[in-house]
Image (cartoon, rainbow, N blue to C red; front, side, top):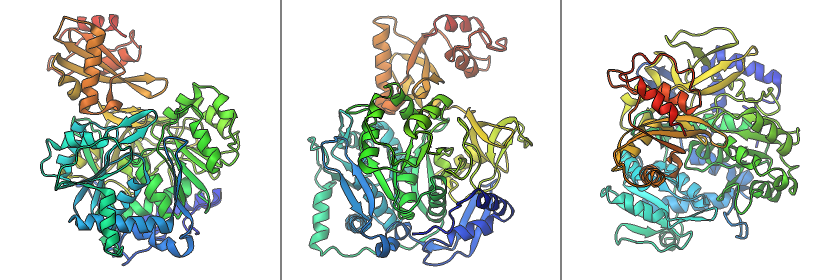
Length: 637
C-alpha cells in the first residue's frame, strides 16, 4: 500500500509546510483524497472558533471501518492486522489478519444489532487489552454507534459518572482482566457502577479470566453465546452504515479543571484523515513494519495509534496485554525481540521505570529490528531521551517526541523520523497542517524565537475536538474562550532559536501523572468525600518516575489514631471514587490552607512548597492568615 500524503524528504517537508500554511484547505483536500469516500465532500472546511463550530469535509459520506478493513481485503487480506501478546508470556499469542478482523467485526456488529444497538446510541466499552476490545470499537463504528472506551483502571463511581453523562444504555466488558500479577474484576466493577445506572439495557461480557461473575437475567449476556447466535444465522454480512463526515465517532472522557470529567467528541471524517496522516508521517511507516504502541486503548493514544491510524494505513499493530516490568523488567524487550518490532511508541514513565533496572534486562535481547522510537503522554526528560537513544536505539533510531492531547485527536508537534531533526526534550516542529502560536497572558501573539508563552493553535486541523458531549458551552469555555480566536491547549511552551517547541507543563489545574491527565478538582472532590476530611488542596510536584506526582494538603477533623493509617484511608477513598491512578503520592495534614480574604486557595504557594521551593514563595500579604504558610513549610513531607 502506498501513501500519496507521506512526506519522504526534508525538501518535501519544506514544501508541505509552505502549502499547508498558504492553502490549508487545498492541502487537506489532497490528503483526504487518498481515503475511501462513499460521497465526496461539498466543502473542505467551515469554521468559527468563537462559537466554536468546526466542520471538515461537510457533506462527505464514509464509514471509517471500510477504510480500516474492507478496502484492504483484496491486497492485504492475509496480512496481520493485529498481533496480540498476552499478559503471561507462557500463554499463546494471536495473529489476526485483515480478513479475520473484518469477519470478527462484522460478527460483533451483528451482535450489537441483534441487541437493538442503533446508529447514534452510546456504547460503553470497559475491557482489558484483548483483541476483542478493538473488535468492539470497530463494530460500534461499523453500525454508527458512538463508542466510549473507559480505561480498565477506573473505579465504579468514575464509570457511573461517565455512563450517566453519555446516557450509554449498552456496555461491553470482560469477566476480568490480567495486568501483571493482578487480576482485575471488571464485570464486578461494572455491577457496582450499575447500581446508579438503571437505564443500562444490556451488558455483553467476554470470557477472559474465568473469575466468578454475577449475570443478571435479561440484562447480562455472554459474548460467546451472542456470537453463536450470529453463526446460527449463517454469519450474515453487516454492510457499513454510511456516516456523514461530521457524525460523532466516539466520546472519550478526560479530566478537566472542574471535578466532572468531560466527554471529548471526535468526528468520523476528520479524525480518520488526521490520525492516518500523522501515523504514516511521524513514524515514517513502511508497509510490512511492525508497530508496537504500548498504550491502553482506554486512552486516546490507543484509539489513534493502536486501532484507527495503523489500520487505516494497512499496518500491523501489536497489542500488548501486560505491563513493562512483569514477569521481569525485560518484558518490552522480549516483545520487540520476539516479533522483530520496527516501531516502539511508549511513555516516558515506562522508560524511566525501566532505566532503574539497569541494562541487564536490555542486553539479553536482540533489538536490531527497531527503526523508530517514539515517546508520548508528557515531555520526555533529556536523561530518559538519551538512555532510549543510546541503549535501545543504539544511536541508529530516530526518537520522535510527540506532543498532542485527547482533544487534538492526533500528534500535533513532533519531529518526523529521519526526515526532520530531533532535539532532546523538545517536541520540535509542528506537523504540516498545524499552526501553533505562543500568546502572552493578554492573548497577544509573541513573535520571534527564544520566547515563552501559552501554546495555542490558530487554525483548525481535521481531528480537532468538535464538542464536549451534551455540553457545548463547556467546550467553548475550556478551549476557545481564554484567548478568543484560538484553540488554547492549557500548556506553557518555549520556542528556541530554530523555532523548535518545548512543552513546559500545564498552566491550568490539570496534572500530568504518568502521561494521564487528572484534574486537581477531581482528586480534591474524592479526598473531600472521606468522612474525616474537612477540606483539601491538590497540586503537582516533580516525580522521578511519573513525571508529576500528586501532593495533597488535607485539613483532617479526626485527631485520634495513626496518621499513616488515615493517609491510607484517604488514598483508598480516592482509588474507590476515581481509580488507583489518582491516589495521592503524598498527603500532608495541615490545620489550614493558604487562602485570600475572598476564600480562594493560593495553589501557587502550595505548588512551590510541594516542589521544595520554600524560600521564594512570592507575596503572601494578601492571605487571610500568612502564618499558615510557615506551618505548612515546616510540615512538608
